[in-house]
Structures are given as C-alpha cells and as structure tokens.
Image 1 (cartoon, rainbow, N blue to C red):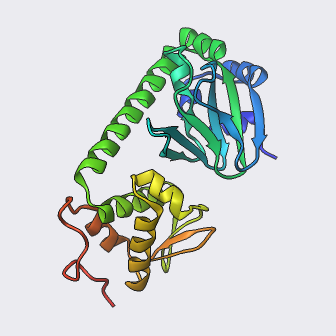
Image 2: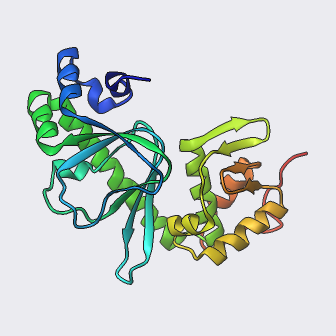
Length: 243
C-alpha cells in the first residue's frame, strides 16, 4: 500500500514543501478511507478542514433556493477541496460526497495556515486554485445561459472525458458510474431531457452508456455539438463520423 508521503507527491500544493516539512505534515494529517455515498461535509458544517483527494471521485454539489441539487464538479485524484477554509471561516455552503470509494487526506485549518506562514508558495498555489474554481463556475453560468441543451450535455461529457477518460480504439472510455439524473444536475437539465439526448446520440453511434461507464465513440462530433450556441441544436447537417 502506498504511504501518505507517496500520495503527497501528487499534489502541487505539497510540492512547495521541503522533505522535513512533508514528514511533519504526514504526522499531523489524517488519511481516511470513505465509501461511495459518504457525505464528507454538508452546508452549514464548519470550514475547519481542507481535503486532498488521493483516489476515487468526489462530487461537489449545492442546493438552489427551490431545493434542487446542482452538481458543481466531479473531482479526481490530485484535486483539493474545502479550500475556502483557508480564506473564510464561514460555514460550508456546499456538499462534498464520495461518488466512488475514496481515499482522502484531511488537514486542519490551523495546519494549512501554518504551512502558508512558513512557505508562502503554498498560499500562492491555494490562491491560484480558488481563482481557477471561480473562473470555472463563471464559465458554467455562461454555458447555462448561452448554450443549447445538446451543447451543454456534449460539453459536460467532453470535460469528464478530459479528466476521467482513457482513449482506446473505440473512442474514449469514462469509467464513472454516472446516472442520467446526475448528468442532468451537472448541466441544469431534467433527467427526461438528458435521456432523450443520450438516446438520440446512441442511435447516431456517438456514445455508449451503462451504469458503470460512458464511452464517447465520436468525440470530434461531440466537440462540434458542444460549440453550438443556444439556437444551434445538433442537426442532420452537423459533421458526421468518417467511416
């Protein structure tokens, strides 16, 4: 089994530390194995820890004013979450849940603040991370306002392929147990709308999907669909897969 320090090597945040600091960090952090479906924190919980994802997938979500769940992101190994604990001691405003069996490392707010004081590069990396998350959310809002339903689903699948996919001779395999409901919550669409779009794409041989994985058989055409504006739903005139 890999050691805690081996896992630390995979995080840019930790790479700024020297060997002695990493050894000390290994003594004051907790490695946790969490099962699929485990809620790591909920809205209203204190922002007193930051987490490093070592293996598995984490789902970050929030509730709208009308109590609908919106998925903000799926995180993969090497990602950090709960990072706002560094800049704000307000309670959590979103939920983190294990979407698969995961191994995570929990670090207290006091520990991360001490790291920042001793190694300013750590603070710089966290600032970059927060900036990236803000830009990503801004892009998501623009997409919801300006993109067609087909484009939103295509873009979401391509992003998942970039982060979780493995290319093979039949396209790109995304080994993620993604339900149609969760895909809808990721792109702001009903499960019924997502189901209709996926069924259309199955018939066009653009993808295959089961309970354990999604295979994008024609990523190039999906990229074309993802680029279309709100009035540009996929049509028979869109580029076809070459035989």
